[in-house]
Structure formats: structure tokens, C-alpha cells
Image 1 (cartoon, rainbow, N blue to C red):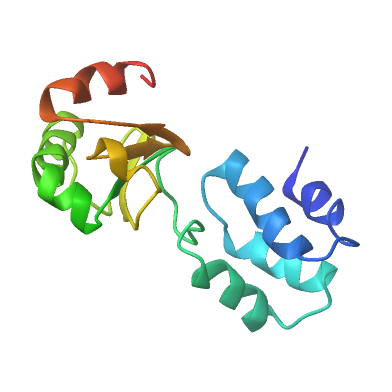
Image 2 (tube, one colour; image 1 turned 120 degrees about the vertical axis):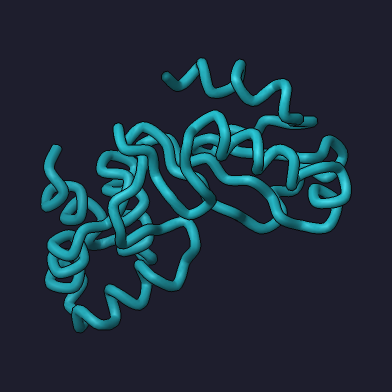
Length: 147
């Protein structure tokens, strides 16, 4: 299904633009300009307003990024439990820094706020799936599932 069909399928739903953006981004990993322009037309709003929705929410990206979105919680419990070491392990294993994507387009690294799993910190998510009690030694095995 192309992005125009996806957006059109949410046209009559309350909050449809957010759902449409989620659906498109799940296929493309980001929201290109043409997607935002199409959403503005379908939802009968100015392009600036559609862009405002796309850029306001941290789960959306308007820039190309890797297919598998790795987010690490940067809240206090994760920080105290060793999130900095996990970040270093992710960066070393992937050869990129936080906020970047791998050259092959397979991975992107991002920070996020609390994911509600403070009982088992540090926490990362990959495409929304949480990994609990992560440490530098567990990173290679976790990433292998997505390679």
C-alpha cells in the first residue's frame, strides 16, 4: 500500500493524522515532505500544521533514519543503573553516535524518556519492543536479532 492510500484510510477518523503518520512511518521509517503535504491535503489543514504534528511528537521523524529504531531511556533510574555504558556499547557496536543512523539504513539510535519499565533498568526499545536489564554485554545478542 502506498502512502497516499494509507493516509486516505484515516481521513474520517478522529486523530486520523497521527494514526496515518504512525502507519506511514512504520513502512518508511520517517515522514518525507510529500507525506506531510499529502496529509495536509487529505485532512484539509495547512502544510505547516501537518508539519507541526509530525515534528512535535518525538516518535515521528521528518528525516531519513534507520529501519530499526533503537531508543534508550534517559530517565534517572536508567541513568543510575548504567545507561551511559549501554549507550557506549550501542555506539561501538553500530559504529554511529546517538541521533544517527547506520550507513546501511538498518539502525537508528535515539534517546527517549521513561518507557515505564523502571523495575528493570536500563531499558532500550527496538521498534517499540522493550529490552530490560540491558548491559554492554547483552547488546551484541540483542542487535543480532535485527541484522
